[in-house]
Image 1 (cartoon, one colour):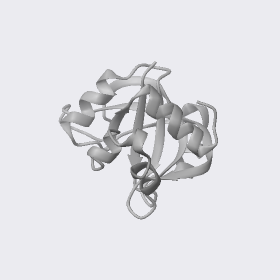
Image 2 (cartoon, helix red, strand yellow):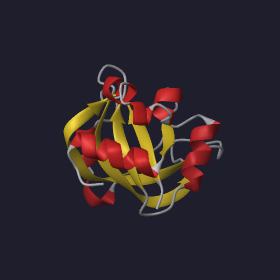
Image 3 (cartoon, one colour):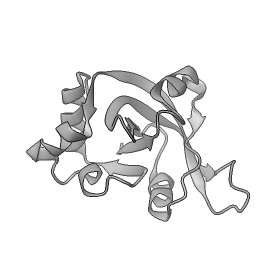
Length: 139
């Protein structure tokens, strides 16, 4: 299993919106970056990801799982862009802020620290375990 991070502007698509979709989940659509597209094409059903609120909040708020592998983005008429479908798994007991992540030496190489603008990112196993611990959830 691989781990990922999905960034969303909470005023556009929030953790509550994701939770409301239930087990059927939702397409992670609208991504228009080739590196992020490639990340999604590498995902497998069952992979887990952090749900990250960007913009003003800048914090990991929950865990999602990939429920459908990469397929054409339904909002892209060109056939260029792909997305996966994700469903909420559980919220963090304590959201983990970007500032906290940046201040944690063990997370200094996390892609969120190195390239915080990328909307879909891989997360290393040890990063996953530590951020889950910081958020009060079992990895």
